[in-house]
Image (cartoon, rainbow, N blue to C red; front, side):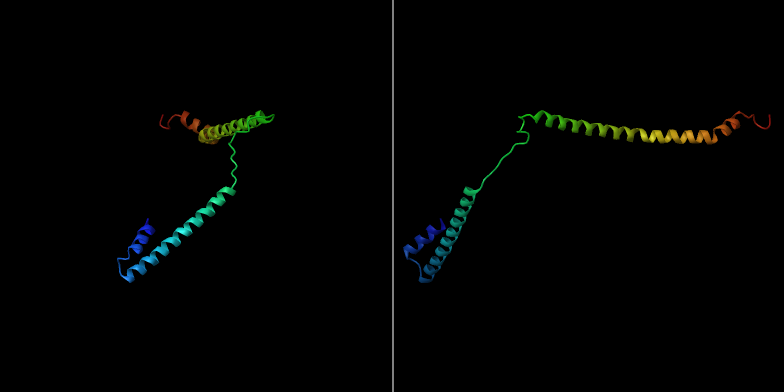
Length: 126
């Protein structure tokens, strides 16, 4: 588009010599950019033509003798992971209560007999 306008300007010759020379330089610069772009485009087309693409879909190899075994092992891994997650959650839920029970048992064994004696003894004034 720009090259066409500049070429028309040169062909009309209704301008000064300096303007015509400047227009000619501009036409040359624009033409050089066009040539570079076309060269780059040709190189990219060559790369694309020589490229190979391999597409594999996950799980598309579902046929064959080992396919059910692969599926079973995958399922077993999921079940084992889920079971381990439940076990960790149960431990996290029960651990504070187990520690509290152990602490109460410790205090009961350590001080339970004396505490019961002190609670059963009548006050000194009676």
